[in-house]
Length: 168
Image (cartoon, rainbow, N blue to C red; front, side, top):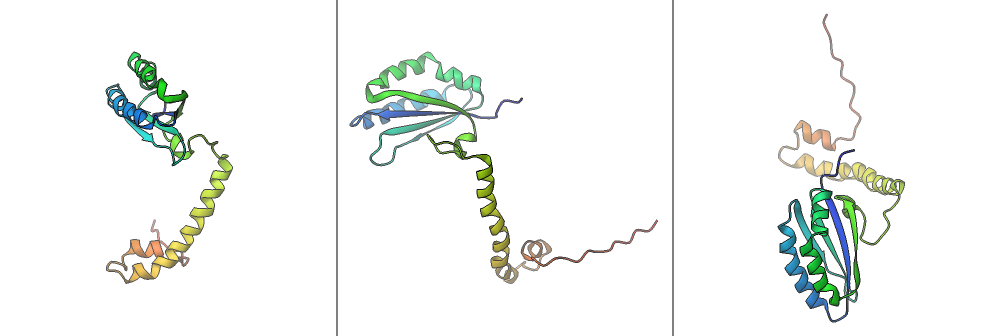
């Protein structure tokens, strides 16, 4: 089995009330340090909605080994000691394949695959029928609307089969 091309670490920190500015200052200090580690592809700090105190930090690394090197590094451990007074409890750390984070909301269960399929089908299938019907007349009036590629995209009528003569 091949290793994912990107690995994501999702870290959630519950910040104590009145400590948000200190926590954000800490994130501004730790992000440039994380960027110096091998395989770092980026980081996103997602602020909590109004009235909540859970920050989500999403770290992107190229491989699991590089991610673990950062997570287990001495420098990160020292920085975690600095932030502990600002947290109501230690952070939760999840490690996921790269795209998995973007397909499921943080802290929520991922929907069953058959439900994802039904949702995608219920959106894509009607759009694939309705968009050509709605845009066909408009595209036909534009310059280049008579090009074969445009006609093929907007023409919903069945095309007759073409006979090709083959001479032996």
